[in-house]
Length: 152
Image (tube, rainbow, N blue to C red; front, side, top):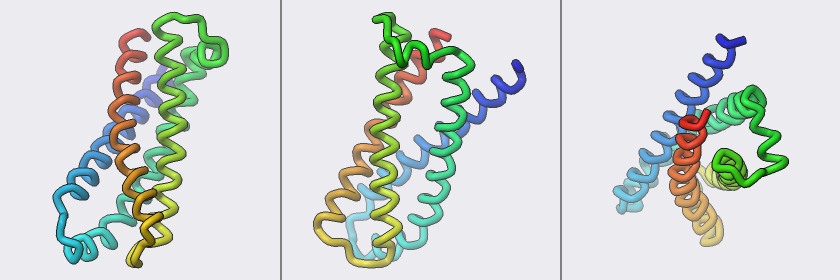
């Protein structure tokens, strides 16, 4: 059983590194590519590859996170918070991950639907807003992951 737990932790860690690193890369790419023509040349090629990879990483993170939460009995603290530091960290991380997952789904749907096409103003706002939300939420989720790992 210990081997499975350690393997799941390593999968979770590698996927988190991939997820957050990819998010940072795309954020920097989005900020640095100001020329619309360059954006139209780059994003249709990088976006789908990145999007599918990130979707797989998110699924692996959720599966390994559920496994680890079960292994460490964290769902008891999630469902019945007791005000302890670890309980607060579990609840906060779960809320952030839920918001992050919804933001990712919204962003993925818009990006997939509009790849290589002109976006409406609303699609642009949702896409950029969800992308920025994902970027910042990643930093907070990472903080609470570190808190949990230090406690466990």
